[in-house]
Length: 260
Image 1 (spheres, rainbow, N blue to C red):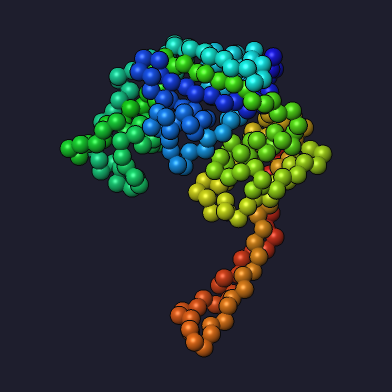
Image 2 (cartoon, rainbow, N blue to C red):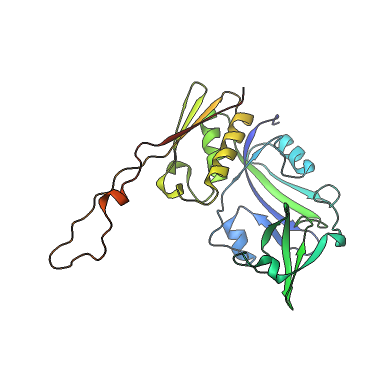
């Protein structure tokens, strides 16, 4: 049995019962067999935090009752899951409304006036957007196995980072826990990620909410001066930028405090 705030790593495959369509999986081989493999997708056990929401309650209850390394199956009806599909939630817009949208294509998820929708069709200068949840109206079958339960607070911090930055491995981050403070040294490859401040806030929110021993998060970004190579006589440099223009700020750190 798993209680509230338990950290579980879960392998699972979810399919639409009516069509057999693959909805989601953590298994690369399953994705390949069903011609749904995506190169940019990370296939590994996924973190579920009991009580955090985001999954149907019937699935969460089954996770609570499950034993580690045992296989289970649960079927979720639309009423128990994501609701019935509502045709009135499909809207049609002139294509000019999306003039600034990159990669406008069928299947794209867009935030329109504060609501998330899925592009269903693009034709005759119009775009049809469905604001129903993507899984609305589908009966889902989950086959799953809990691979491990995370007990250690430092391991929980690393698991949350792995969930928020799924394309980077846990070892990419230098993480320390001292008292009630978690210090996270961010790798250089995330410095310029779009939405990085939002991701950092999400990490802080998860840690402060679900890891009770944590009260403060310290994010560290370290910058160092780059050595400017002098041009050789054989291959003169063209428009070499000035050294002072290439210098970065060194030793920058950002500290976020939990609300009192």
